[in-house]
Length: 481
Image 1 (cartoon, one colour):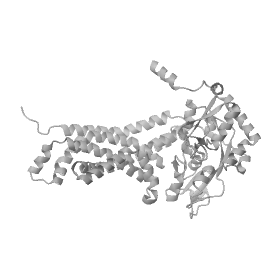
Image 2 (image 1 turned 45 degrees about the vertical axis):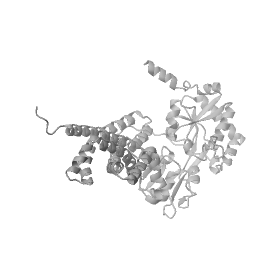
Image 3 (image 1 turned 60 degrees about the vertical axis):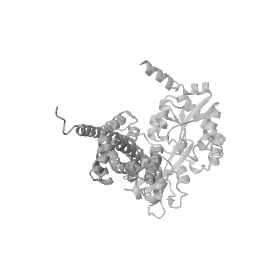
Image 4 (image 1 turned 180 degrees about the vertical axis):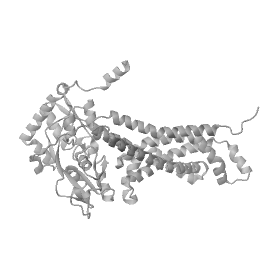
């Protein structure tokens, strides 16, 4: 209990409930959560001055802080975790393209709008689609946890959730999705400028960006709204938006609001979705391991028994794939080589994970091969066996027997690393958990369900490996005393 108390006291820097504005004035600083990965024009690093932040939200935040009599400081957080991090007290407010959706309005205090956006539908140039309803039954991409995702979820179409602004349009060009629905501020910069992409000229829907504030901070919300109102009256907000080429007729028109849906329960449909995601996770892991095992064994044989060229080539492969993050490898395989390979998200995930884990398996098998006594190979040669016969019948079977425990450990690790495939728009188990947590507005039950399913997937393999180890370790012909 003492350790928990110390950890809580050291780790919690949030002000008392309802006292955030008082704390801001005492510190002389307001902290706002945002994600630099959102890029231009929201908040990003000035290419001409490294480390300096620019963007229309940076300008708005500086103007707000000045009117509040304090300084503003941005705190970097992953965009999908901004709202939970705000509620935890990691910063004072959220300002980073936070859409004023009904569920967020129910969860937070939202300021008056500072930007009105439109949902823009993009399709491939030459495709016959003229409206969102023409994409019924098709695959449509957007950012996860957005109003556009809510729209896609309400229609009978397959949603592809992405984490970045540019990736959906890359997939649209390559034919991996049939359309992309995103805010016009994103579509105009990342999609509509592409030669192979056509943006439809009408607004699918409209919404607004607001500042997110914790529920108890009514005083802070009132102060921010007063500052925004003063900026609008003085024309300062229009000046900022005009500077970033964002001011349009929508900024002076009313935006309708809708009622927040009640939090979803962990119902039968959600259980079905979790089971489907678990099956996809298992499929990804098994197929990737089926690539990793033979390729890793080949690399190990090349390193141990190959000539200088083969040994060097195997080592280069192993160091390349072990020395770079698997997430980077997935991005290069799926997006960087997309025009040449045309892989779907599942195929890219299987191949990417398989190639990565082959490097780790190679070192496991190399160690196992080197652990076999030299006399084994010498005895096989004395019996007239050739090099390949020795490998096939003597060395490899014994090496696989020695490598079984670390192979099991690697498969369990691969099972968990399959969650990275969500970055290429595949909804596996961890991604499904995140989406369910947002719908339920709680991570507890979805997190427990996710953990249970991962254990159910990995435990049978671990138990099978233990049984095989015990069986293989038995002396089939014990010595008699």
